Length: 535
Image 1 (cartoon, rainbow, N blue to C red):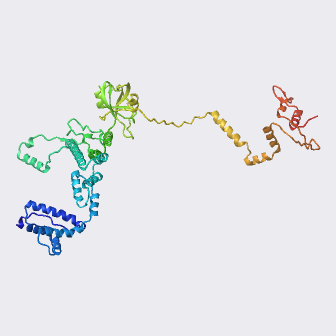
Image 2: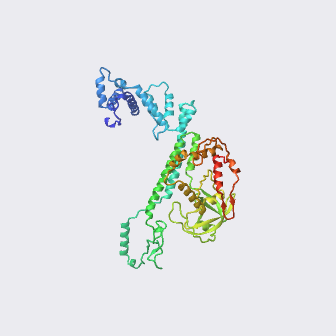
Image 3: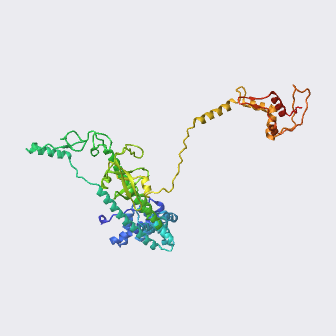
């Protein structure tokens, strides 16, 4: 009979003694369910299985605490319950209930079930009310939380119904998006069967050994590592001699067999993986936005769409043919590649020696020619110049043409004034400036400084009187002293206006060849100016 007993875990009392009471109740409840499943109704058998499954440590506790109790299942369970019940801490149970949060990937029903288990030992008056409060505060769904806060009259069952609906919609949408992503990845990745090189080589050797006609077969032609064609070349040297590779820009080989592309392919693979990871992160952010309100949900979609936009392309008619062209506001010319030039009818090209450099410098583009083409949009038409370059990188419209066609518009133009160029001065201006500098520098004797000249001017009485005359317009109480002509000094109060000097008749006689000044003129003029009346 003992060999047919189902396994059941023992009660580990020592793992968490502070929470032994609630753990014992849950353990006994599960054991009684086992009794019902095994159809065990005998009290003695139930008591024996209780002590057996509880473990050796619990049996020792019962042996020490049983006293004179009867040997029945109910009495044995009560002894152990009484022993473990004081170990129950209601405040600790409430704390565990309050701090319990919904785990990542856990459904709302599972979260509520755990809350109900924790609420059994918390002695709440209204269990549903406490669980509803805990769901609103600690659930993972922001949309469910906002909906519950907007509608406070909803009960716990209403919130659970709404949460199940949101979870089901999110799960189905995620499944659909995951299938789309897997399809994209599996379509781009191809699997090739693995071949055993040694085994294949051995099979070839054995077939050549057993087949007598193997030696009569033509020699297998190998591929040239420089041009990718058959080797050896029949019609002369390798076509790649002297040619430049478009991948690594080295000579004597083509891009299709370039061995330097391995590094580029490595970077390309890294970029592809990065793009897939970025797309996944955007989907996760989009999934997170589903947990927000309806207004934020629509805004997040708009933001995600804007972030995925690529370079601006437009469909316009070039030479009466609709073409897809990229608008580049940083370019100053219009460019067509060979493929686009062929699609629009291969118009005649004119030779042009212009050098087109990419942004940031580098190797110039290979320009095959230029042509004037008619460009038509929905509202405007014009004839513009296009440069045709080698390659298949697409067509491009520069800013001047895009602006004239109304495809782009500058919202906030910035005006930059170029610095004025210094004008070249004439010879006369240079001579005049040199003369002014000479007068300013040579007017004062080198033996005297400027401060000395100012000091001497302040002490000169004649100069000060002249300054006073020019400021006031007249000379008052002027005293004159002529020691050589007068024997005594006298002060004369004479008032002469400067304009009266012009009334003196000048005795100067002019002749065609010279000017004659009589000697008496100078003496009379000096006396008149100094205020002396000559009898």
